Amino acid sequence: MSVSKELYCICRGPHGDRDMVQCEKCEEWYHWDCIGFTQEQADDDFCCAKCLSAEKITEAKAEEKPKPEAGEDLVIRLLENLGDTEMVNCVRQVLAEEQKQSKNK
Image (tube, rainbow, N blue to C red; front, side, top):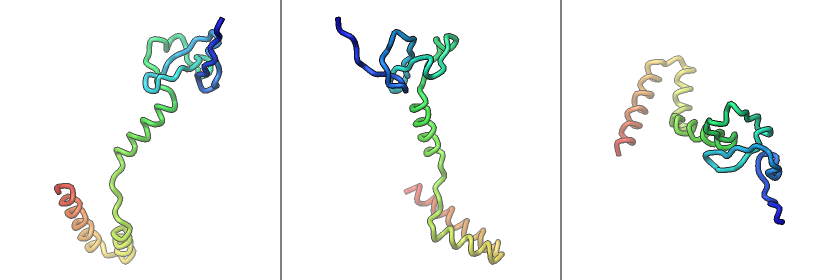
């Protein structure tokens, strides 16, 4: 008789005749009791915490706005500190136009 020595789940334990669910992304198997999975969730798609975290990081990176270069940011902060709002607006407008032009290339 052959006993499977495969390890699963966050507990890195064997199947152990316990109810398990498979992550739809990474296809890793998890014991219901280890992850708090319930019978009510049995018909739902399951995505493990590791894959959910990776998705959130990917989404956050996609939503990140490009940051101005350090020199540009410094110039804007200096002008703001001097109270020259007209010049700040002018610099921001120039930077925005440059950014549009670089996107169109």
